[in-house]
Image (cartoon, rainbow, N blue to C red; front, side, top):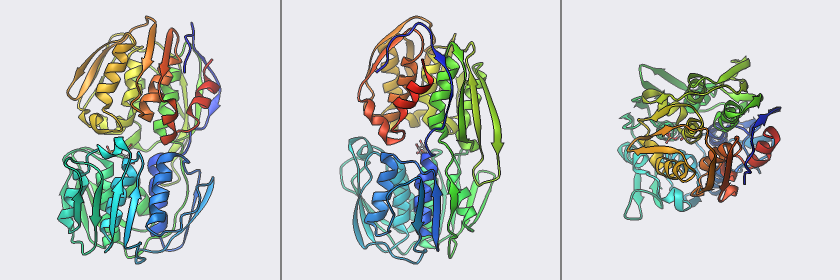
Length: 426
Ligand code: S3P
């Protein structure tokens, strides 16, 4: 996939595809609204197709994904199909948020997914939904899919999250919305708040403060009219690439700057990278701006604590940046990485080691000693899109010759990733 080059020059500008988290929510909340929602720039990728397909199976007339999409909302009192099979593919966000959505209605849905999704923990969502009154059956002998949610007759919930998770938080808020009951959530650390912002822009009463989110159930939701910002998790690959380059700069236009997503910018800056935010726009529900990133000398850093949820999906690429920084980088407090699309701690450590990086695995992270020495070898992505892109970027740097297996797995979140990488790197 990549070829060894003696020096990496980056140039030009690009627009990364629409934010995945915002795109999932725009489809779901569009269906629940009274009236037609307009979504510009929705992400067109396998994960968003999973949400669109599941909503169609539930009976909502979601049109084919298009650059300007009109979603006809049916209102909160519309009942989805009484029995459905929802294939969520590789998408944890589709599964967990839709479990909450289904729980609010007197209907029954069975969730399935691919091998990776079937292994991911679902009890963290099932437990509080059962507390609200939903009936949930996990069919296998381990926590995961397939599972069946039988919803309806919910009661109010006051729940403290065991681990910070925007997916669990969102699932419970959505159950409150569709079930018409109050929900209080206590978060151990802040997580991305797209759900809160979107529901508030639709007229719902959501109070946030002191680690607590309080939803007063709305009786209706206004339709949305939104432009989806560029996905910061996709932009992070190009910011990392530019930071590791030898010369040039990359401009990434209209990137979402939700504070719950921007931890990677702080970390790259701490490592010494020059990351400028220009043309910041705070007018809409989600802040956005252009990122301009230039190469510099990079040093190791420590990533830990409350910062972790704000960069959880960016840790694989930050680990790759650490492999090219001077000194040691410590990643800690990130045990959640083990239950993503792959065990991202085990897989990142094994791949870095296989290509010649000195790295230790810890239960909740890793310690990486950076090197300028040539790196070479085959990358086992486990079909995980973020591993493919992280090592794709590392493989584009000077003195690196990496063969990324199953490169097509980027289709989950960024189908044109390899084209865009070739566009900015030479
Ligand atoms: C997401 C939340 C995060 C993130 C995932 C998308 C979301 O998961 O890793 O890619 O859209 O809410 P967790 O909430 O499980 O940490």
